[in-house]
Length: 601
Image (tube, rainbow, N blue to C red; front, side, top):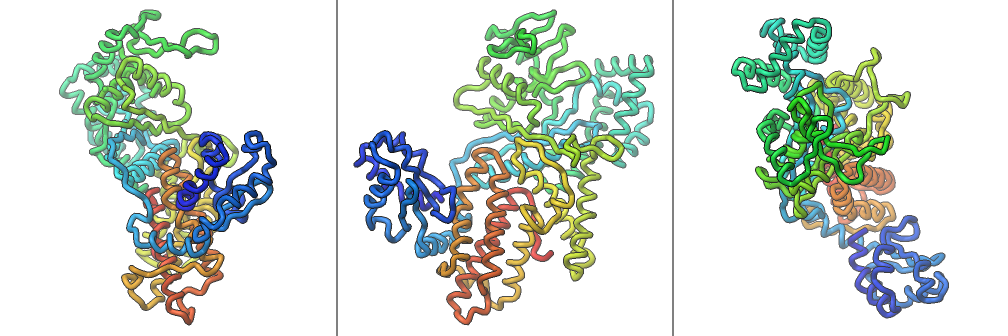
């Protein structure tokens, strides 16, 4: 609890100085207690034994004596097994919670604004979004929301795959079908079928393949008719992507699109600047960069391919350009992602003048990003005032422990998964609360179903894989979205039963009389620091876990403490204020994760 630690440190530091202990020895050791029953803050004295030539037990006694009554109004100080423990007193908890209740931002401070670019979602044109796109989209959206609430200027960029060799065959397939039929097929959301048909023709029909290659040349030379057909493909795909974004409730819009096509004009600049910095070398006719410390399995230097021997750019080049106005991904030919990502860096640093570049992309791209960032730094695309971070994440697995697949063995379509979530949630709501009917049931089912899917993802450490389990994620028990949403709905029902006005609580003093009140208020006082931990490490699961701790503590408080009919008005009003603060934090926490909290469910 940072608030308590802030009160302790000045006196603790004075005692350490008197003992002749350097700050570096102890400052990282004092912190949140791992045994809650012993205290809120603890300090292990074992690390001081060799300095003071005393046992940890004796040192802990000396430190407690050093405090005397200096913190008598703040915390109880005790020693146990060589640890000094500090436990916040109920009057201090009451005072701090009362102050927090009056804060519209529940303790979260606005920071000095910086400009942050967040690259996330990134589907491919003419391909359906699958469950693999879920993590990038919802993790990126949560990070955007938290950064925005912190006061930063956040630029969302959806780096869609809208360029390259495949578009030759896709445009030719569109021509073969006829525009009206092709658009109809794309409109029904069967993008995968459209792509597979084009790929099958490309692999089996040499005439079609030749026309596709010529079409790529026309596309790259900005032929008017080819660009018109390409735009059709992009626009129809975006209609489908936007449908999913709307269902998911994420912030991405068409204004956030920055497809690979946007960086093509910067690719020659990437090559030019790399050449000026003497970073380009020839390898098998291709222009490459060799970076120190990178080797393949055979111990040979591992190159970043910038321009292939046929003159085509590599996506690394686009990435570097994307760091001067952004990942090695594979493509079927033409441009390479390494070149594209370098172009992306140039764009974001020079055009957008951003301070921080965040890339929410799967863990398999970890090596690629490390190499791209190293190359961009070496080429002076990024200086010491800019930071670039790969926010990696694991895979979504089925119960068999393998990458989640449909019954047919294909990748699970994200739209199908989201519709099933809503359908399953509707059945759960019908069973839990049959009084909710009609349009309200449809609305609540959508909120609960989508919230369950997003929370199951966000509540998992993003660096790890997680198992997709319908029963667990839709459960009203445990660390799930429905459990948190139900806690908020329960708080809403309390205020529906109460006849008073919420504004009457504005200046209410909170008094924590019982252990249940103290436990809940301890959690409420930690909300802002858990938020900071979450955004500082770009780990939404930290915030998720704390909201769950709040909801769990509220459940215990609700079961053991009479709220409305207490026969004592001051107690009633104090507990109502605790309920209101709890509801505000749960609602805000879920909102920062992109999840709604219904008032009834």
